[in-house]
Image (cartoon, rainbow, N blue to C red; front, top):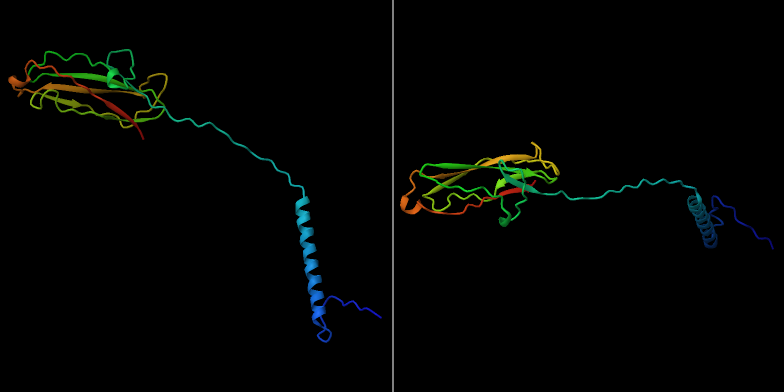
Length: 188
C-alpha cells in the first residue's frame, strides 16, 4: 500500500475531497499559528533598553497677609479681627464744616498679589445729617513681599471725616460715636 502525501500548493479539483480540504486547512492554520508564536517569542525575547526621567516637586499655597498701621507709626499690625484693629487715633473737637483726615498704610506681606477694597463704607457715624466719610481709591493689584515692606508692596489710603456745615446742633453737638473701617485684601 502506498500512501501518497498531497503537495501543498494549488489543489487539483479532481482529487479535492472534503478530507483533503480539511487537512490542507489544518496545515495552513498550524503554519500560521507557528509563525505567530515565533513572532511573539521574538518580540518577548528582544532586548529593549529603557531610561526613565522622573520629576518631583512640592506644592505650596500662597500666603495672604494684609497688615496695616497709622501713617507715622513704625509697627505693622496684622489687625485680622475687629478686636486687633489698628488704632486711628482720636478725632476730637469737630465743628460744623470741619474735617479730619486719617492716613493709613497697608502692606501686603503675603506672597499672593491682592486687590484692595473698602469692606465697610459707612456714610455717617451718628446721623446722616451730622457726618460724611470719604475714602480714597485703593489699588487693585498690590504685589506681595513677605519679610520686608517695600514701595511696591505698600500703599497709603485716606479716610476723611467731615462734620457737615448743615449739621443740626440738637442732634450732632456733644456726640460720641465709634468708627470702624475695614480694608479687604482679596486674591485674584
